[in-house]
Length: 198
Image (cartoon, rainbow, N blue to C red; front, side, top):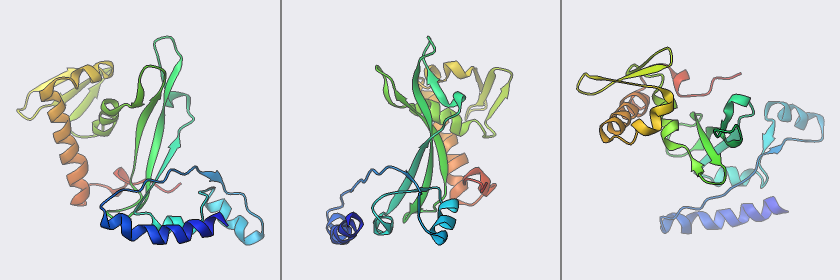
């Protein structure tokens, strides 16, 4: 009954939302795909999760993004006393009417008492870490600046380095060149941008 109501409601909402240039955000929780019947069990084995609301919702979405928390011990963010204050989240673009689907990334969400939100600067470090402009030797990283000079730093001082305007601008340049433009021009390997099938 809920799925039918949502299907009828979404079909009536799509055009008014588009005309008003508004965004309609739907938050939904993944559920384990528990089914009855042999044919449905085969689907459940290939799709372990489903979202309530029926398939009409999936059809109506312009963007469908899956956020799943990683459970590895290294995926947690800890404070100086070892208490967990955040965790790493895997993001996968399940559907997009604006671009290609299947792209993925990782970032860390802080859910502690003082700082709540996404670790933006740390996420940028993970994104540019595999590029040709950032090399590592032991616990030190070296980033090549636009003028040919290099800057050495340790991962722990990344957030402080991002406060420097020249350093931050260079990180944005690398992101634009190595991630955004390379994807648009289909350069490099597709596995750098998509999740590989297990």
